Image (cartoon, rainbow, N blue to C red; front, side):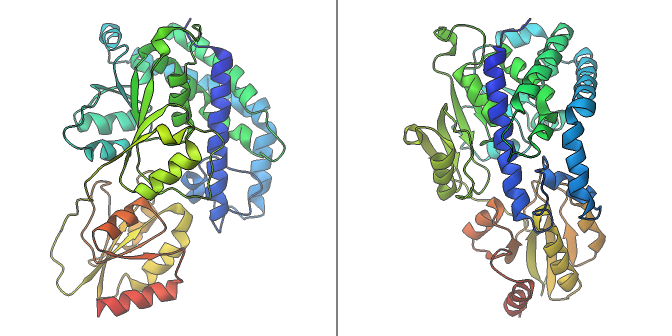
Length: 416
């Protein structure tokens, strides 16, 4: 029905969800509110604002979810997603002839909305592929607005593919979640299985020779790496799979205490805005990292002046669900102080609309992900954006290093 090897794909998906499991565990343990959970919850910071149940209830709730996953949840979830995929294919926009004409060319793989900004920072002389494959309509819309030609998986697949994708998802999901005892919660990661297999089949059908992406080690990064290694059912000696390469666009700060379980094999080059992080990524996440070429984006963050705020000390709070309680505490202490004008900027992947309640003349929650205000000081966790502001001379205060009282005292001192 389609040309992928179920065994190789199962190996790839297991590596993909193990990487995401370890990443979720890493961030969960760093969160003071969620670190005590005995079950690793997928994308826990996207769910955090909904997890308002008593702390004693949450472990039991997630424990029940793990035990009933295969019996009551996984099958109906995959069937529902297959029905949605059928609906999307019936409404597809692209023509098969257009797709066939692009086979074997380069491709931008859009697994996250962050890729739009990363592409925009590349030097003008860099020749990018003509087409993008996006994993969701939201990401596709963002790229289309920037002028890129974008496909979704349903633009490439046919209705007759869906049954095979559903069966393959069931088979791969069950195999991938067989885990050691300390991976409590790993089966929950398989909620992504059908979308992952769908993208894998679409990517195989396009068959690009080179792939550009911002994903570093999540499920999409592992998928692209296994594609470049060859997960199709053809013999390994088939020449169409030789020489596939991937270029990574770095977009975040890397932490040396997080080693992914799977090391990427087909990374050819990396574009970096923060070389120390690029070196950490290559050391921890890439096999034969000495063969990878490092390029520098070469451009600093572009700041917008906004309205004139005479006499106000401008402060940017970089938000993340992991530090929500601390940021709420800081805002409550300074948002009405006439010495300051506060900008609060959410992480582009997380909804933090709860910070809108402080709206006033001296406080603004930034709604546009591409708006970066000119400020004197930044309060943040260790983030890529804080590093970029530091490079243009802003005062940076990290919540990991300072108490709330010291942060406020420093801001008052500099504002005077």
